[in-house]
Image 1 (cartoon, helix red, strand yellow):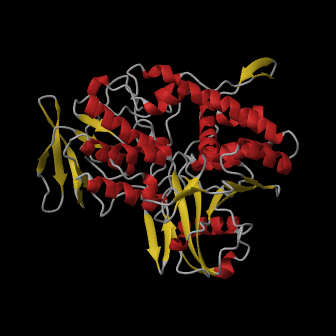
Image 2 (cartoon, rainbow, N blue to C red; image 1 turned 90 degrees about the horizontal axis):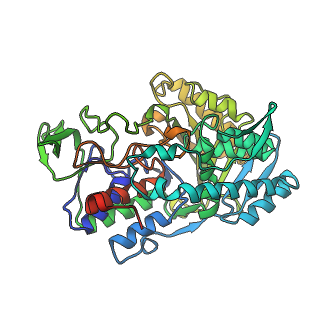
Image 3 (cartoon, rainbow, N blue to C red; image 1 turned 60 degrees about the vertical axis):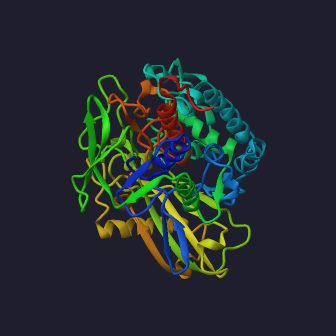
Length: 492
């Protein structure tokens, strides 16, 4: 197996339980992929996702791979409110966790009568899209006739526009035409941007993303998401999965028309070939040695469209105030301009900034300090539509923009600052969006099985796309394909 990301480890644990001998080769020094951590002076921060929105994925993994459930290994609970939102016009609203009625009431109170009802009705249409696409999109291997998922599952309203009847095709159009309040449209656009999607072009089916969050809730693991990664890693070890860290894979070995092993690169093992009956690639195309595992007519990766994430880790003196929201989103006054910058290789003047302030003693040295994380979706590192994130001046300018945006949330942020650490897409890579139906299949990801028998793809760049929950789903799909072969019809 190539890579020790969350999807690869989810597949490894399931395969080991099914009787396979599994060895994972990871080029870095640790497990977890994008689910990383940074520690200094008693402070600890997640450097990847800060919340989990579909915990059932990892609960199922632990149920299928051992007796001890996930909740016996980590302390996990819903954050409430799920999120606080500050809009450019000064509107401030906190949305309760996993309560559609509560969200409707909160939006009505903050945005005016009718706003909550429009959002609730929109979520009802998003639920219809979920029911239509959930299983083939998330729980089954990508069909050979994947083109059927190119049909738009979101039942957009028919509206009179420019002298003719039209339906919203993009998420931005859903927000502008159906929600009828620029703040609700901003709420929707910001959700898409957080997942690495351009709301101006993402299909209307991206409505599934806020639906999933508000239906299944926002969950935090004590110790951060890194604690979840550690729990999955330890479950792999318990099932006798072997890990080889610092081992870069140069390519996949083909023999008799199928994948037959790996060739290692660099170090004392450089050039050594490791035999294997099956190969699972969880590190994108970098470990395939130039091999392209798809053929004409297959879904191709859309990595060139994926943005990055800019993160500022703040060590603050002073206690976290009682009643502080775990997650606050400070919205851009113009998400269309922000998206144009992010996907056009520029720095947004006023980006959407997420402020994470966990109530977790393990993240700080004591009760009179606080660990805060600021994040924004930004252009990726390098490439025709990227930025040079190794430029120190650019890094500092972007960090200052995020800190300034966070001042309405933490007014004394500069006075309390002990130190800060900056992470850019140059260090953390790209944000791989989840797969979406609609738009002719443009937002699907490559199938987990490939044109080369014995070679499988797992993780954010493969079906069903990126995100912590989706990675766990990809691991279940790959394990099912290997264990059950052509008879596998999807997760149960």
